[in-house]
Length: 491
Image 1 (cartoon, helix red, strand yellow):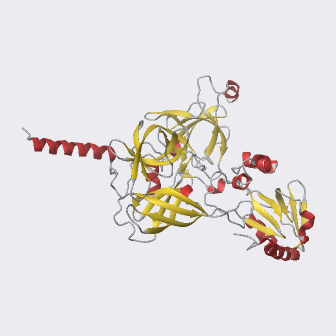
Image 2 (tube, helix red, strand yellow):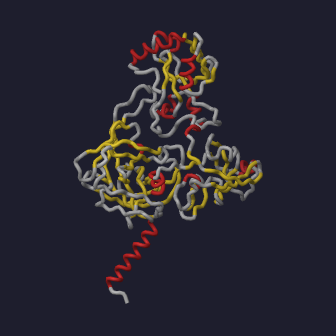
Image 3 (tube, helix red, strand yellow):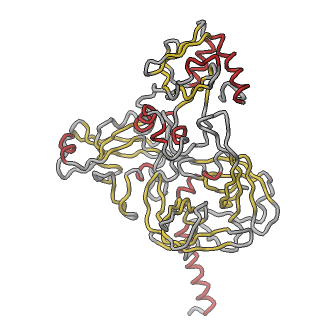
């Protein structure tokens, strides 16, 4: 018969065993743990309309989470175009500096590293598990000042998919609700019962709902792994006429493959107008959803982009069933990271990319990006060239690997040497001396290496700009003096 002490010891061992089995190497985070840091970032964003300039510096306040090895986890949006990073530890007066180690613009997280190798002394590392408990109750650990850590309750509702950081790919997020006011600046979320980390609060809206980056995605990022990308975009097949056109029966499911990224996982495997019926034995409904055994209805992108060890296909082949040319076919797809080279017109978040420019005879040429267009204010869709707007809406992704960037004449700096072209604005460059233009780098090389006495630019609408080659640098010198521009180009 067990004594009282033996019973207590047995209960503790059993609880420890069950907790260890459930959470793996996860360690609870207590209110007293020195894991939550305050981060102050000075940022200076580039000017996308006048790319030789930078905007007025701004201050970003964020929460940092210590993850070991002198590293801090922080939302990526806090460190884009940073000039300095200052970090305060709990109950410490000293301010430490840090630098960016790496970031993932699609997940929306970044890792900083202390410059002082001894800065992490007395800090406790937070580890993120693969398991999330949904639905459930969580606690948001907010650092209001160096000495005060507050906790606020949230309801973790369900898992869903979206490109929530304005990135290029959809990734899992946890939808939450709370009656309390939350900042959404990278706060740690722990399970209310076991205090096991569940994720990081990425955003919180006025309607009392928010989004949390789940712990399994965070773990994947901390481990230094890339996120897999399916490599295609699809359209729902919900009307009977379209379904009949592709030879689908009334009870058939599936979505239409509408776009394929060159060099991606899907390139050479899927074809345009394939009807995707099944992924890894999961049937895909006409809106692009499948029934997950644990999380319910999820977007099909989860089966490709998810990195939860329990059901991830990262590093594995994925079996697909499609309807091609009105016949069923079985395919296999190797998951690869998103090929940045497939993006023709950058969009969403800046991905920490400074806009490029090239000045020729006081004329500014740029590569089209959505950031350039949105820089024109809240009514930007009414203020920019309709041709640029159309391209941004429908041609962001390359149709083949040979397509180049959209190079355009953004503005003419008014000088006496280029007065014939002062009204030219937002015109797409087609050729230079008869050669098709696909990038600013190519344009710069062509002008520099040209043996012709004249440089002739032809726009897509037929408008022409012609200069003597020997005049270009002379006018550029005048432009740099008059408009305080440091260089002819920034690449």
